[in-house]
Image (tube, rainbow, N blue to C red; front, side):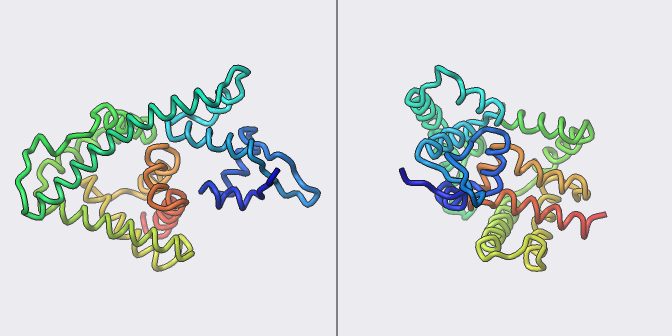
Length: 257
């Protein structure tokens, strides 16, 4: 049986070494064996269990619940995979609609076609947005409710040029941060801090106010804690959620009052 070290599993799966260590500590994914040198070694069974963990994380199940599910005596991996496929197929259909909406909006903003106002929101789920807003209020308190309302009111006044400007700015900043991660730049380096300064300005535009130190660092924590946000950044580049959150925290501590 082929065995993999924790670093090899991390490279194979895209899961960080730190996360694998955490899974071991909480009993979610134990290695097949631990060598005399203290190295963890994983076999095929552990790789399959890790795949199940990642599928369940994609479906927003908390780690504690995942452990309960995987450790049930009647757990059927084949049936679980079939359920995952059905759920992910439904999500894929929704994402295709969102991509179509995004593409049509880009073409409209470039002046090539006209787009009806009601078509701007095809593929979005109002209940998802309501869920995000409720979680933000729960995390940051009732003062967040007023901020959400202020942001919603301000965004209604944005022109096509505003959306094009800030949409392009965010894409450029995200690409820059992803490249910095790929190049191994520290999250608190001058180059990354300059990009985060632009990210902070983008958040300020979206919120219609400048985020405080606590609010901005808290937003970074939300990127790593919430499975939707984590998945969104990890899809851009593995490790990006943690990297971005760390850079935001460093920027908040250094530059925000």
